[in-house]
Image (cartoon, rainbow, N blue to C red; front, side, top):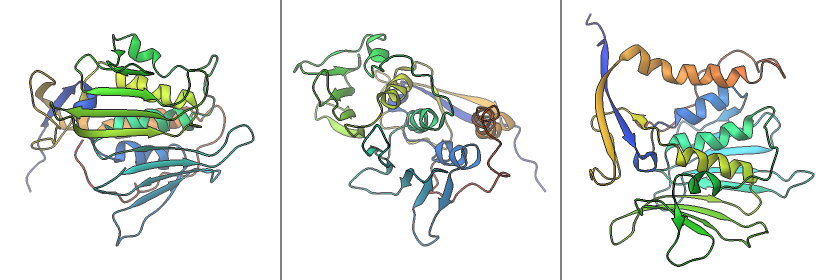
Length: 261
């Protein structure tokens, strides 16, 4: 019997908004195993449903060539109407995970009104040429728009395009009642300059233009790659140890469409 290779070739890509979608397990497995979300899936359908322990939030992953693949819906609460967020197929999983991590944090630190544009201004995103309440990335490929008034609620759109024809790559949508700190978690992850890891031969990047992305491939210990998801699960589970016991023993990861990370 042949032994597995000791190393695997991994791609490290920046900026992360042009890294491709990645592996859905980066989101679904920690929600299930570390945060106690229950899952249901039909083996005859390429769909995953995850619901929060209090049954107020539902995350749906359903391949849709004409729409958003990921939809996060939350029921109304005492102080907030129902809200939603959705993400298309090539939205990097690291950005979506920032939202679900913030949502499931047992004691979120919200000491001041969140400003979703703040993290982007800090890395020199500029107002759009058309004006309005929006910012564009330095490379001109990513746009963040607030569709409400400056002082009132409103929907948020994050759109990534390529080329002179503005070919769409992905879009994230946040309904007008989405908690601002969750949108800020998304834009903070979007602003993070660190490259993200992608495996697969070859990884499916939206572009390989050296003018737009930095792409480095190197050999990484196989054990390190394999343990990345488990390390993430343990880190998220540790957040709950001071507030509530672990929600049961680990289970098998929910069924999911496969995509390389």
